[in-house]
Image (cartoon, rainbow, N blue to C red; front, side, top):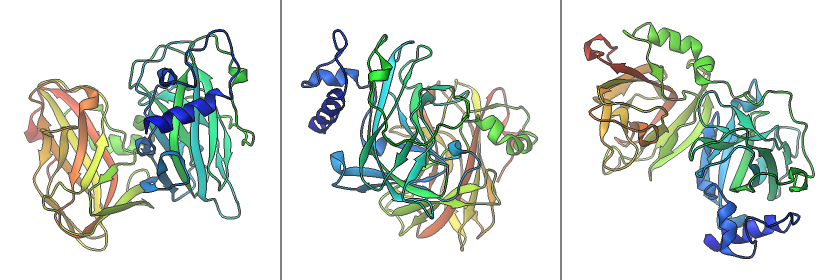
Length: 389
């Protein structure tokens, strides 16, 4: 993989003009110093779409993330693919995004997929962003570009590359994405750009609306059941990660759930453990010792009732310690249920260290996962006053 990365970056560097002393030499491993993300196709995630990794020998590294948008969004940013930036960025740095993409299933009547914009921005509210890079994606694997100038200093993990894909119902394959930081004072006009590009929409850089706004009605109803308002630490519109050896998943329309979208996870057989197949969802916001963590997930059995051994909030890595959980629940067929879990944090947890999780490996079944709301209610909140299943 390292040689693949070097070859790809070298290809980008060959397209750049020489301006004073370059930060990296395209012919050596020093080129990696410009890269500020992890360029593998499996690092793509996002919301408003289905995500499935598959083999494709036609693209660098041989892996691609298939992004399925089931329905045209009200806005182009209603469906998007994200890739995290893992290194710091300084105000004034010139950033180049170079990503592989191809159209697997363009919209009806078209041979291409329109990408209204590609930005670099905050991974959570207020979702401010910089950069631009509209593109028209063809059926052939091609490297596309976006660029911008950082408007502030950003710590590692605060930024993501966001590819807007909600302009229509369509299927797009995304390969590796390379994010390069050329430092300040680099002439951005000399960077590679897309030869064929759609018009950039007249949406502000903050167009990715905060979850508090997108799910305002559902949050108001939920908070009416709680003793305190609490702080939302999940994005209910984010596409959850469905994992395990015996599962398949797809994005679906879900008129009965807030936001109107869900993910259908199908489990082919029971796992050796109930957690062998499941769902995880990244959270944001630190959790302090003594905080009450509350979770409310919209779930539905597809065609038949389903059993979920456990839902809740756990640490994101082994030993996956529970923070807020509930006992096993049975969901009726074709009827949305809100399933609750709660618990008091026994220690401090950083924002990047916790996930919402659902265990699905109890047996062959199909479950629809709608929005997942996780609230930090703060200290001093009694479990007795919270909704129960």
